[in-house]
Image (cartoon, rainbow, N blue to C red; front, side, top):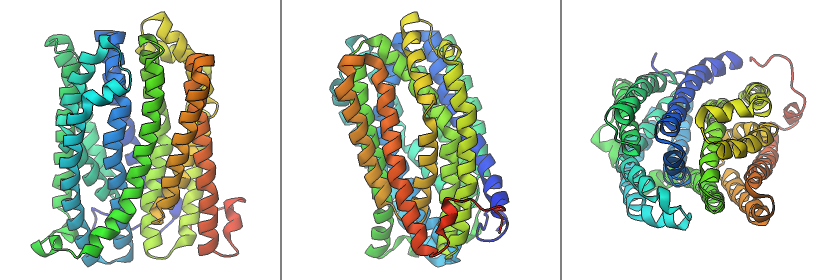
Length: 456
């Protein structure tokens, strides 16, 4: 049992922070090697190659984001079973999760590889970067099995309170990825193919580390009977996983529409948008990780009926989100030229990036808060509102880019992000208030007036 963590007992702030920091390092390393990967491509191969790799971002988010949504949805139920102390149900759900994940991997691999050329053409990919985008995409999606396996195994470990093993996996795979990037690009001269191969191989290593730890946890050792589930077990998993997967996919579709309009503005804008997206993904991570932490914490405590602890856990993670905004949002606002120069070398792309970063930096607090409140709802087993918020995000993002891209150009992408974040955050915040008011009648005013002493 030392390999897992019961979050239903003990001081809340200490539990969340002890869980958060290994998870924080894990995700930041993952984002960092994605960032360095892009920097190596941009500096080593040029802006066109960076544009080709960055052009794949929205398609990758569509495919991998769907699988991550399912993983997160499934893991909430694992956390609830663990929090309730029902290990029989936990093993049954884990067996069903493995079978559903296998089917999902096959389907998504076929769709991504078979439809890649069509997706890229729909995005109005410039002919000058089409070949490299295809090369990068075919290799990346060919190794999708390792990406999905890592996400599933890491989500299960986090649901059981283990955030250290995913950290170890990412430390090892990050070092390997950066070493292979440099070897394949600068020594072997494999171009964007080398970057893709390095990514796939590092995901394989991360997967093996997580699977080895899962195999060592006696509580979840599975037998054949755990794979012979009634339809209700699969239905329960899918009811929680599908809305979260749809939410990610809908958001990705909105990003693809933005990419379509960005590509129409020229390769310089495509390269700038790629750099801006990398920075956003990197700087959102601390709050996003707070969302993962509160989801696991909420899953276990809602499974045991401890909604008072859920409420207090929200306060801790909102504090993390506020610190994130004050530090990283300020960096985006006050040092955009320096940030742009790290990834880009041509003046035109840098000028567009310098427009985008301060604008989004001033409002990044909205998406930081969104991660916390949305993940809390998901951890409570309430995925419907987060799914609706994904639809709202897409509608707002697409509306802004369609209405304003022709008149104000590249900066409309920043306004599209801000509108999408704000609308989704407000919807989830109201829904969480309603849910906690129902679970804690007469005490939900603490969502507005934070009490002293979070530990209970």
